[in-house]
Amino acid sequence: MRTASLVILAAGSSTRFGRPKQWEPVGPKGEAVLDITLRDAFAFGCEGARIVVRPSHADMARERYRSNRLVKIVVQPEPLGTGHAALVGMEHAVGTCIVANGDDLYGRESLRIAMEHARDGLAEEHALVAFDLGRTLSPSGPVNRAACSNEDDRLVGIEEVIGLRRDADGEIRDESGRTRKSDVHVSMNLWVFREQFGTLLLEMNRGRAPVPAAEMGLPDAVRHALAAGHAFRVLRTPDAWHGLTFAADADLVRRTLAQQP
Image (tube, rainbow, N blue to C red; front, side, top):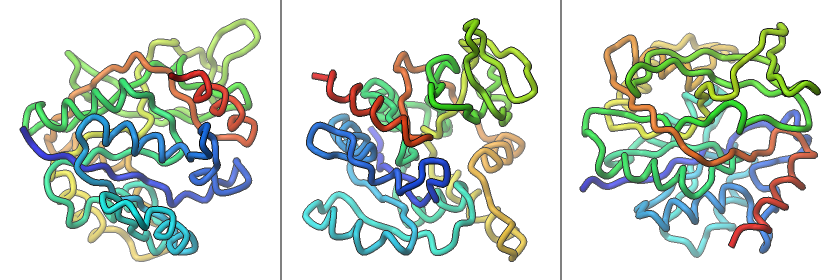
């Protein structure tokens, strides 16, 4: 059985939310979404966690988790994309890393599935915990999702789809008006990465153009890994996603957590 650690990406700018959503109190005891993710991951055997934050949040985050020796705060010095944030979080980590967004409530079963693959799945195989598109929409406005193509539960492609929302007739449409099926698998950035993915991120970062606009997105890194022959297992979760895209989403997340045992 292999070791596994958690990397939470919490360095985003929260532009649409309007305030730092990664620290928004939504749990019954004032927990942020990432605190729920930490709780679930540790319950299923995660051995440590690294939270990637922006420089302005570093002191606050360190104080917040000062008494938890399993949690380490690492700083992404510049906003260079989710792939770069994952690199910062995975750097110096030993073994497999589960990478998750700090503002997405994935559900307990999703974390269990991720931990199971991290510890007992094929050693050479990364994994994506995939959600049904219809379970990832916000009632507050359109969202962007990474739609996945898979064959025999193997990931073969990933495509960014913009402006998804459910219309009054119940159909899901993207920004162009194209209808999308509810059961299409999408990525919500809940990944299981073996150590070789960290090496790939490091190589990509070295080749990145040294300009502020040259961000390295995690979907881009996954596509690069697929092209390089990396194998990704698609693990479908029965959980519904809840998250903090818009400010109005916070009350929905609070109601969801208040109803959980």
